[in-house]
Image (tube, rainbow, N blue to C red):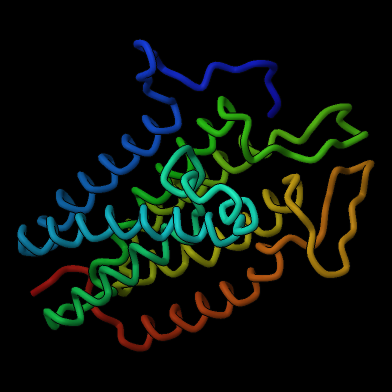
Length: 254
């Protein structure tokens, strides 16, 4: 969605200001951590472990998100190295990777089952995707391609936010079923990758790689880096879903 001269700040006092984007990130982190701790205790987790896991996800999720964003825009940041530590710009797959890897290392060291904790992260991930994509509108980021059939750009941020809503509702519907630990997380990752790769990424005005093609009428573009990486994400998700079904761990800790 394109808006003329949006105000990205919630408020400003002199040079200090609070951006809607920053508020969206902070709110999604707070909701995600609240859910991990509240639901985790209900499932039998030690409170100290839940706080540690939440802190690791928070810190390394941000580091991973910023790191991958920098790597995917390396040319700009090599010319402007100080901008690495300034401004907006986070890569969602980097956030997932950083948070998951740090939590997995901690739980492996503590002889805890990663699958029993992974499902708890799904709510925060979906809320984050919903809020951050809406904040992208005010930053005029994640812009869609122009489509002649629409007479304007695709509202790619709205599509992305809608994906988060759909997957959040799906999570709570599946919570009514007796599923093995880890299934919620990896099935979320599979469907997130499908919807992000097929719907949102196809209409985003991102650079194209390898056999690039744009349909000006529909505003579709192939292939972005996310398009090319999506089959790997799907293969990983399918493999892990089969594994958690085989392990068949209970979601609650005994």
